Length: 339
Image (cartoon, helix red, strand yellow):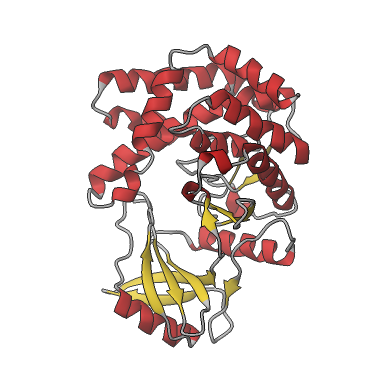
């Protein structure tokens, strides 16, 4: 059993208030936050202190939990004016993690600071600088270049460098045409990525730059990043590719958006021509994983509406680009990034 097939924790607000007081000595009010496989809460005190509490899925490995702890600590030690990441709040015993039990099941939890700002999803597209987004991602990857943790080398369904989950699960989709679309992108990946494996660098990446995880200030400037739950050691080029996968959803002129993100990334970091050519294939595979995972997990947990949040737009993009020449797209990516 994996964290993707195990039901998330189900603590109520009253339980959370007691847990937070017992472990952190804080009296808080509680609001639920959207979550996939864990359980997240927004907490605030009478003195306007704000926090986020994460209670991990009972099946999450302690090695992966420690990986996330270590990277948050790394960002805290490499603090800058450009990047804000959540800061860990220790328990009254001085620990990075707390432990609670419910129904004889043990759960790890972590409290972090709340980053004040708006999520990128909540601002108008005309106000978004996709070039700025790419630049921001490039800077974050430079910070991650100085971070090491052997637990990042893991098998993760959300990793475009390991499509075992996709290969095994996409047949769960009932629609034959949709299965053909996914099969096509898997084939394109096998033809264009696998033979060039040695030309594509690998590193630890955040792996989930969607617009729920990117925080902007009052001037709509990107400054914050949250949710390191999908971190993995994989293709470096997958980082901007994942960002593109979510940035183009439901928006016109996806080639321009993708190009601006890559141009911005290359302004603050490096991608080789081979890596730039790989972007469109990684982008499509990520969205194939997304729709397959949504289908898989929604059958297990039909009441979790968050699982299908990007599904319609993802299928719309995949169906549209299925009719395109991916080699031509790949060449456009290189040209746009080099402008």
